[in-house]
Amino acid sequence: MGSSSARGDQWTFLTNHARVLLWIARDQDVRLRDIAAGIGITERAVQIIVADLEAAGYLTRTRVGRRNRYTVDDSVALRHPAEAGHPVGDLLGAFLHREDAPDPALAGPDAAAAP
Image (tube, rainbow, N blue to C red; front, top):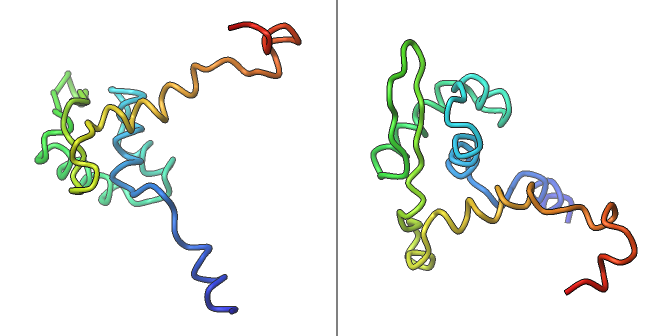
């Protein structure tokens, strides 16, 4: 059983591709080095992932001066056949909009009774 607990500490639900896309969706002017530092992967790995996402149509890159600005197309379908009926915007929305949700602990006692 020792090997399964060691292996169990290694996996996550989201791929690095999803993480990079989420970072870009949060900040279209983000630098790749900042994404790499935030996710914990190399800047080169982020460059490869951005190229993959761009080639698949999930994002476009526009040069603005010396920087890049990224635009996410949230209407592109997820890649796996089991999720192909869902746009990537559904995934992004699940993670991006939770930050906008009010904290129930701060809403007060009457918030639970509100419709």
